[in-house]
Length: 342
Image 1 (spheres, rainbow, N blue to C red):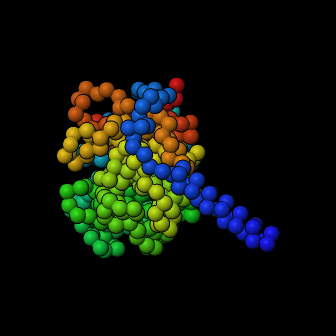
Image 2 (image 1 turned 60 degrees about the horizontal axis):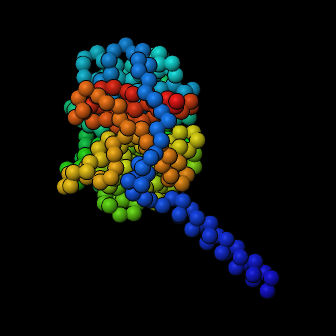
Image 3 (image 1 turned 60 degrees about the vertical axis):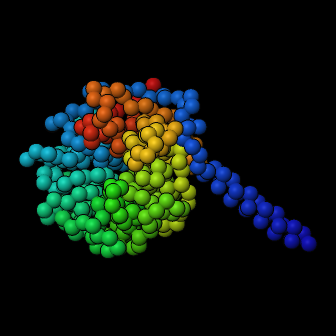
């Protein structure tokens, strides 16, 4: 009898724990999170020493040495799109002339290699994910150069928008840029050597589905956080591709980043209160939301800085260094904003 009571008690405890996790990961309207949310950050100007002005940019990340990697969209002959900057903003490396068409997101793996998702094609270039050594040598390419619209295929990417690396070296790539046409809207998983493992997610608004995922990030548990922009939510999967949760409270995500403390940073560059608009997301303001990747609670909101041309879209790409400094990239503004805590 005592054993039976023990079994029942353990079952009740497990049920309570599961319920607690589900509650902690609940989604809620971002209208509730924007009320009196503090902004403990301030804008830093003139922080970067670069060999040229920024081109349109959304791809940036931080490496294990706390250096910032940026891959912008070079528009001039001779332009080198890949830059590595020190925490002080000094350019350490600049290479990659002619490699990319529309670098959309970048990740750095545990060995310091740089992975770039190129979301567009031109001629025999683009529509690939490229692995570069820290000094710019091409080590591996995924997908077929210049070929896109690879619906239902495994060897051709359909506009790869994001790339993230797991602790064991596995690579995750998000597909499906744009909202006008049908696209894959899925995640493709490879091992560290580029061997295909599986795909997961399908196009749609349901649990475990995506519509034009725009960016991805990984937390300390190797859970995948996907900026499901056209569904105005962050979708979470485990490392095997199993659906975990979907959070609306971070707004309409264009950029997403998880730091070493499992803090989640989301750039909302599109939310609109205009009924009927493709980016209609009532109650959500454009800006950066900062919260916990563990329970989904939004803690801070950073409004976009005022710019001379207000029609230009605010930042869409994010990276956060070990000091907590936030780097926010805007393709429209051709700039990277830096925010530090007060």
